[in-house]
Amino acid sequence: MHGTHLTRYDAVVVGSGPAGYTAAVYLGRAGRSVVLLEGGTAPGGALMTTPEIENYPGFPDGAGGPELMDSIRRQALRCGATLVPVDAASVELTGAGHRVVAADGTAYDARALVLATGAEHRRLGIDGEDRLAGRGVSWCGTCDGPFFAGRDVVVVGGGDTAVEEACFLSRIAGQVHLVHRSARLRASRVLQDRLATRANVTVHLDTRVRAIEGTDRVTGVRLDQRSLPVAGVFVAIGHDPRSALVAGAVETTASGHVVVEHPSSRTNVPGVFACGDLVDPTYRQAITAAGSGCVAALDADAYLAARDTTRDAA
Amino acid sequence: MNPVTSDSFDDQVRRSALPVLVDFWAPWCTRCAGMEPAVREVATTFAGRGSVVTVDVEAHPELAAEHLVLSLPAVAFYRDGAVVRTLAGPRSAEELAAAFEEVLDGQH
Ligand SMILES: Cc1cc2nc3c(=O)[nH]c(=O)nc-3n(C[C@H](O)[C@H](O)[C@H](O)COP(=O)(O)OP(=O)(O)OC[C@H]3O[C@@H](n4cnc5c(N)ncnc54)[C@H](O)[C@@H]3O)c2cc1C
Image (tube, rainbow over all chains, first blue to last red; front, side):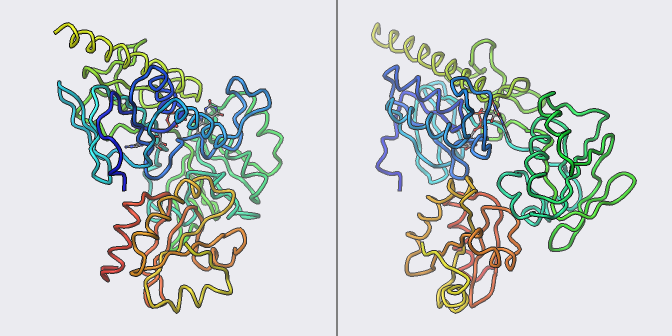
């Protein structure tokens, strides 16, 4: 169905979060032909399931995640980028150029490649998690919370996302149990203060979820010392970089983050640049992802310009 | 893509001559909106061989409950009046098409 697209570009961007779309904005404005593969399942990235973003500059009254992403997306289109809603299935990185093959079989050739595939939620790796996924186990409170109106639920984790989920769910669910494996929450002060105002949230510190119980749907969780009867388990224990696409092809760290030559976005493969949560184990914000997408585009443009000059001279 | 209700579900899905892909969504579900183009594409590709219907679970919570939908987006495949396969979470057009193909082939 995408056969009508030109398949040779100056740059291919893979990933449609703040990093990828921002890279496409800059490459388009630099006059480069650029195609962005948005992904076949969740275009728009992590912010698509975040109803309210309070810390993205320029929006004093907050911005809705989907609205913000739609704005950056339209800006990329307006700057001339071609956007295709398909997954990149594989990459072939060669000295002469790079090829990205999409899930629908279309091959995209480009001299520069920008990787911006973001991060995905981490799994607990415990019994019952896979079997009951979609049957009460969820990674997205704002998506699935309404199914648990008046029911008791567990939120697993202690960071910003977990505390945000617990606050959100406390308005819908019956009792909310926030279970965190260490002695204190990692979430920011603001969020912890917000959590403290919720009467129906119980925090269980120094506690691990050992198993999720239920046959065709979740009926409870087993903790270290006791079990809790709950209908839902919301897992918010962090994110892992989505680097499977380039595993073995570009250098990654033990945690799976793509290695870049900071402060640039250059990977160990010439002409391949990476940005956003894919490279960043520390900051992981929409604004830092957008900022690093800009850096990747400028690096890619400089790389292309250097090669344009060499070719002109030859 | 044909929206079905509790009243039309039996006619359009359970008594359908063709296998049916049922796409469960809700107005609050942004990931469902993200998957809509994929569902639309599959509806076109399978026209004549299988049908595609959508269920708004906010308007029809009883259909969600009956199908044990506790996460969105969710998909159920019906053949000969019974659910033969379910998928939870966002899927691409390619993944939906591959699953539908298997349902048509009777592999599920
Ligand atoms: C619940 C939650 C709340 C958050 N709240 C805030 C907040 O309030 N403020 C803030 O600043 N940050 C927030 N963040 C963090 C922020 O969302 C991320 O830092 C940011 O989205 C990272 O952007 P990214 O472009 O690197 O990747 P992502 O946003 O993860 O986007 C990458 C996207 O690329 C696409 N993709 C992946 N693989 C492929 C492939 N093979 N082919 C094609 N496409 C692919 C997918 O659509 C994927 O979603 C939040 C995160 C979460 C999970």
